[in-house]
Length: 214
Image (cartoon, rainbow, N blue to C red; front, side, top):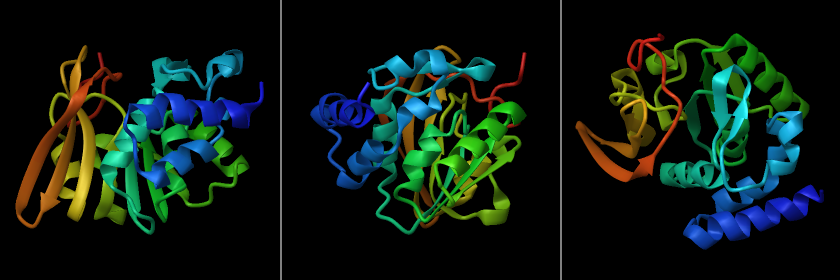
């Protein structure tokens, strides 16, 4: 496969054609080698329009969903972002193409190690990953300009909302374990504004402020 051509096709046909307009986001997705972030047996499907399984019962999100969530953050460059649910590291890499620094939390030590090694190999020096409960956020580096949660939560985790910078946005799927609404939570002074973006389905967000592990 000619991966750069496949990436270009993915961006034009799956992402730009469906309404993503932010050129920073489009260029970021065009740069990140998504085939590096999927299981070796699925490399041929890396640029198709659907999520793919990764180890630990998790998934790498559909390219369009990654681009849409990133666009909703409204990053312009120079920001500090938090990601909850590192997975294979793909969303972190897309954020890292725009943000100054990306902090990412993964509860699975195996996935965290794999993502850390891959991002280092790809020379993403502005991504920091730790193992922990992502629903608690990362208070040490708060407040954040933008927070992305890549798993579905029953509620908006309050620690994440509290760790938003004034004017910052939190993008999080909220609903049942089977179906969620993707929400944009924006902090404006003492006020919190919630906006529904679309329906979606993500794996469950496990943690003190998410779902309990069965």
